[in-house]
Length: 205
Image (cartoon, rainbow, N blue to C red; front, side, top):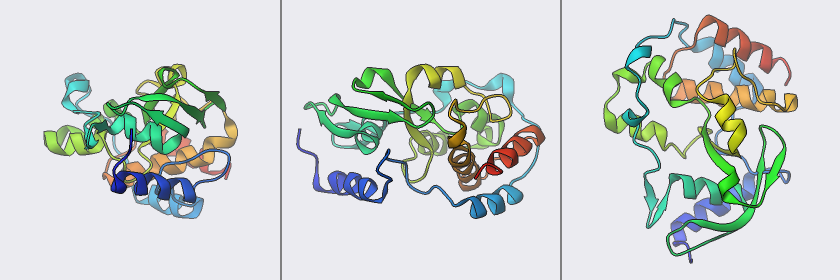
């Protein structure tokens, strides 16, 4: 399938800016910026936990043509990705930065919401409109979405860094920085335990 000029340009731009080991989403702050952003986040207890429903966040919306958000991220973060006429990845290579695994089948790769949808809900998104929650769930403008090993994503589930961290300790710095950026961009709160865990993870930078 031939990508449109605008989508191809966006993917090429991301690839050129990324490290050679693996491609990363845009907008990951430096550790010093992440420290500053962390200090500016609102610390609060979670709320509205019982009212969460994943369907409240319409996700994998169309990005362009027949390509939805999942398919866009698979192309952005993968190498030599070939897609069919429906934009579904047929082949390629994906490196999962959470655990260091490499995959050649898209079915082994999940698209992780760095800050899970439920965590966003209990941190402030419960008061958003449906369109705002859809924008959050499909945000490709920052480090909100990551192509990672499916089992690792499922193990993470909706947990925050005080109860789950990626298997690769040398990824702690990037993980915390990306998490903080998403929380800052979307004006979401953090719990005291979450704040402490993020601060500790930034200490590995």
